[in-house]
Length: 389
Ligand SMILES: NC(=O)c1ccc[n+]([C@@H]2O[C@H](COP(=O)([O-])OP(=O)(O)OC[C@H]3O[C@@H](n4cnc5c(N)ncnc54)[C@H](O)[C@@H]3O)[C@@H](O)[C@H]2O)c1
Image 1: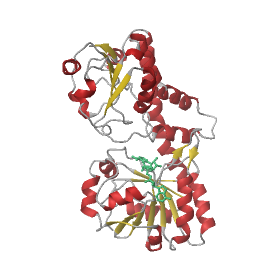
Image 2: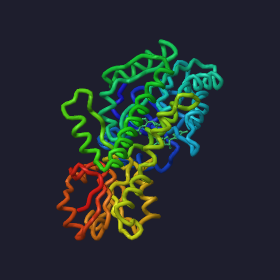
Image 3: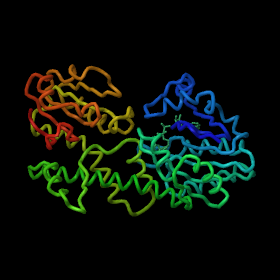
Image 4: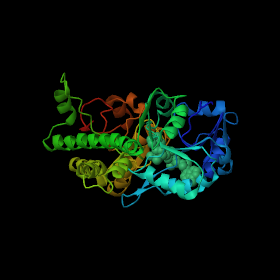
């Protein structure tokens, strides 16, 4: 069995071969032409090497020959912040009757606690065949998929030993370690980690606001607090959002009475763009100012704007300022110099590697006038979020 390709959109595995199935025709067309519909370090090379060899594109009609099916369809948070697993349910309803006796379903999408149990029941309702099921959460960080797929321990939650053994046999071909547990623990473990990270960033952001309130910059405070202190390591502030952290936090708190920190984290993180706008307004009259916004993605070095707080900031600035020019090396290509020229306010909202070459002197030169800076990630190394240049 060769599993030497990882694709975020791959849905079906067959022995000796990986078949990718997706309902998005545009994505399928692009991939069939060797074009990746998203940026992911190392995946294009894998696609070029394997397309139409070990990796082919196919349809659910081919499932009857499959030994294992990996479900990686998207799961969503509704407008009312409720879990939406409808894509997973649809896929299972469609594929369960097509599978052969003894085949394995690997549920990999992020789901709320107890979903695997519901999927188990759904499979039983849809087929009398002996189908095995595990929950094996995807834990890679976007942008590091290829590297982390091999390095991260793979959690496998199963209701029985046979299902675990089948899944373990596949994963052991490429991961360093598998961890055996039950599906509910696997679901909680996946969500717990991301929720913890989301809350940690929220606290860092709240501490930044408190320091600002006292007229101090958080970077000075962190430098002093963390210095040579064994229990330090307080993270820096910054936008925390994207397609996973918020969703996972709301998945885990759903239908539980224990959710105050999680909800509070959401309020702090999600309102950070409003906070930035109000802090800028204290320093200048935004409605008369031309803004240059650097970075639109939800985090650095990716092309993904899903759930991006920079996008939210952009929408706010459009309403509250004279004009907004944007630059992002992955989304809104264009000359940085042109975007910066004549700006009154520059906001560096994503710490893309491309911006680490920026210096205060360089910016001064490109802008040509006095400018207010909001350096969300301390890219310019001044140790201040808001400052005049
Ligand atoms: N992207 C990541 O880095 C990452 C990391 C960890 C976990 N996850 C989890 O993995 C899951 C997928 O994430 P994603 O970012 O790839 O989502 P995505 O929305 O980019 O991709 C999901 C794909 O599923 C396809 N799809 C939907 N219904 C389908 C169906 N019935 N049959 C076939 N294909 C169907 C969509 O067309 C889409 O291409 C989510 O639950 C997410 O939380 C993703």
